[in-house]
Structure formats: C-alpha cells, structure tokens
Length: 557
Image 1 (cartoon, rainbow, N blue to C red):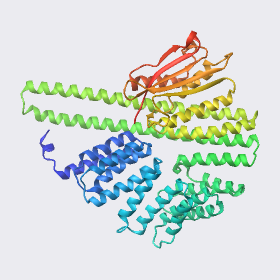
Image 2: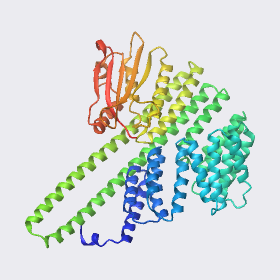
Image 3: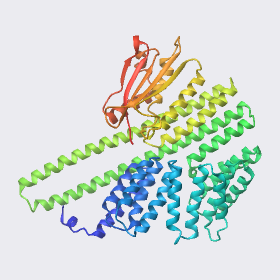
C-alpha cells in the first residue's frame, strides 16, 4: 500500500463509493447488468457512512437488478442485509425497508405478505407523510387487493383517494389506471374505458420521460376493453394509435399484449386467411426489427466495454510504472526482481480468469442470439402453412404459440430463469409439435428429487434444441409411435441439475451425423463444457433403438 492509500480519509472513502456507484449507473444504461451489479456491491462495501438514505441509494439499485431479473429471493436477501446495518435515523431505515419489502412480495406473488408489509409501512408514515406519500401506499394496497380478487375493497380505496385535493397529476393518473383495471376484471367495461381515458388525458399533456410508455399503456388498455364490448371499430382506432407511437420507447411486454389483442380481434371479426397472414407477417417483421435492435445494442455495449478495458489497462500500466520507479529508489536489486516476478504472476492469473469469464458471457449472449429468432420465425412459418388446411387447428396453434412466444421473449432477456418457467415453455413447445404431428410421438417429463415449482434457476433455451432434434431427425420415417422422456434430477455435483433426454427413434448414429446437427446444439455443447467442465454424453438406447443424451445444467438459487 503506498503513501496516498494510507492517507485516505473517511470523505475519500465516500467519494470512492460514489465513483463505483456512478460507474454502475453507466453500465446499467448500457444494459450490462452483471458489471453494474458488481460495481453496486463495491459501492456498498466501500461506503463507511451511517446515513440510512445514502446507503439505501446503493442498495436499492442492486435490488432493482435482481427484481428486473425476477430473482426476488436475492433481492430480499440484499434488503435484509441493509436492515441489519446500524444506520441512522433508525425510523427512516425501517420506513425504507418496509416500503421496498411490500414491492418485492407483490412482484414475487406473495400477496398476503405484501399486504402485511403495506400496512406496516402505512402505519410508519401516517403521522408525518404528505397526501402524495399516503396515496402511493394506498394505491399499492388496492393493487394487492385486486390481485387477490377483492375487487370491491380495491375499488373503494381508489375512489376515496380521488377525494384528496393536492395529489400529484401522475398519482391521479395511476389511480384512474388502477380503477380501470379493477372495473375491467369486474366486467364493467364502460366504466373501465372512462377511467382509462382520464389516465390517457394526463399522459397526452405530460412532459415526463415515461410519457410514451404511459400513452402506450392507455391505448392498449382501452383497445382491450372495446374488444370485450365487441366495439371493433373503436378498438381498431386505439390499436392504430398505439402503432403511431415511437416503438423504441415502448416496453416489450406491451408489444406482446398488443399482438395478443390483434389476434383476438381478428378471430372475433372472422377475418379471412389473407388478413391473418398479413397480421402474422407484420408481427414477424416487428419481431425481427426488435431482435436486430437488441443485438446491435449488445454489440455496441461490448465494443464500449472493450475500449474501457483497454483504457483501464493502459492506466494500470502507467500506475505500475510509477510504482516501479519509486521502488527502485528504496529497495535493492534482488528485492526488485522478486517483486516484479510476483506481480507478473498474479497479473497473468487475473487476466486469464477475466478472459475465461468474459468468454463464457459472450458464449451465453451468442447462444440466445442464435436460438430465439430461429425458433420464433420457424414457428410463424408453420402457422401460415396450417391456416389454409385447418383454420380451427391454426387458431389453437396460435393460442399456444402466443403463450410460448411470451415465455421465450421474457426468458431470453435473462441469463437464468425459473425452472418452472422453462419447463412451461418446453411443454408448450412439445404440445405445438404434437399439434403439427398428431400421431408421431408422445412425451413425458420426469422430475426426480425436486418439484416443478422448486426455486431453482437455469439458463434458458437449453432443452428445446435436443427435443427438436429428436422429433425432426430421431423420429424421421419411424414406423411406430415415438416417445421422448425428459428426466431432471439434482446432481451429486453441487449447483447442477442432471438432465437425461431419452427417445426411441432412429438411433445414435442419426444424432451424431454432424452434417445434420443444428447449429444451436453445437453452441449449447460449447456452453455446457465451459459452464460445467463436462461434455455432453450421447449413447444408444436399448438394442440401438433411440438415443440417450446426458448432460449437466448449472443452477442458481
């Protein structure tokens, strides 16, 4: 440690925390969540302040990343770490804890706990809070009650809030939106539309950053209500208004919802095949544009990260050079050689470790980039082929596909997803394939030593390519009905699941024919080797009838 490091004061330490925090914010804007998370943790570790508000600024950003990735258990663990710290003022610390706790429980579906935390938060702020702060707590309470299907109680809270005189316009807009949702689920569609329109009026005059997404939400809600009323002309009007917005500022979940409303409207209008095909083509083009923009942003982020790494390397080399000059004047030549040797050894080891981690992350990004568009666009093509032959089957296929599409879009944004969500996507995929080939195969999913709702997280889209390979190649020209068995169990090796996929198809030689293997399996093989240090094992089933694929899957809890 040099002289400057020895003289660092408490203020200097605080400034270091702020430097880590600001760097984390920059990486977050560039969508590099892992790097942002790492820097937020460094900001927390280096902060010596006992100010509850200052510390919570760092903690809330770290929790925000976990919540965004649906890792609610990790978010709650971070909140508990903040709660255990001796920070002042104590009352403010407890208010911050309860306020955050209610949102984590709500988002994770623990509604009774969310309601309990909401009441505790409301009691803490009741004496000193403004109308806006109290209204925010009550709006959340109404949301929790609505999710518990207690529509009457939820509606009464929101109607009472409208009597407040000095509410911020944004809060009033949120109240009207919540009222509209409550009326909608209570089948009172006309009152729902009236409430949505009042929220829409606010967003039309708003200058806030989220104005476009607010408008998009209102247009989507109103169009859904008009579809429910069978007023298709007005529904079409608000759907068209949605498309006139800047789609780059509209959340992906809203675009998925609009796609579902379009399909619902097309079905109610009994549109002919050409209209439905136009809708599918339009959705396909929008999805393609979405993926292109997403991959371009990731590529740009990687380029910026590389430039920053080079700058940091140059800066580090300059610092080391200055240190060497200082050491030369203080130590003898033998000590100098020893220090240089040790420094070089640790530097090279760290660089090798950083390179392995960076390579693994790039492999994961490449895997998602290759697989998601391939699956989505091939599925859309199959729907188009089925429409002309069997319209009812095509609509059934579309309903299942819309659910699968939502899961794929949500799961592909994360490095790890809940096991239950991934298995739901697999089941939807296999059901769609059975619709396409009704007598070709059956399937079974077997969970050993774990249940489907276990809180394990696995990388998305690892299983589907192997299942697709069995259906497309293993069961090709099969004279009897095929069977796919997917077995998942806890591995003896900690932090891994054992996955075994068994089919009774054409045999292992068909699977190992490299000229026919899909590229996504090659990508997965590379990823599995890097993540588990073990290869994927292929072997024959009984009497060379069928194939067994055996590999490990990394998990998080």
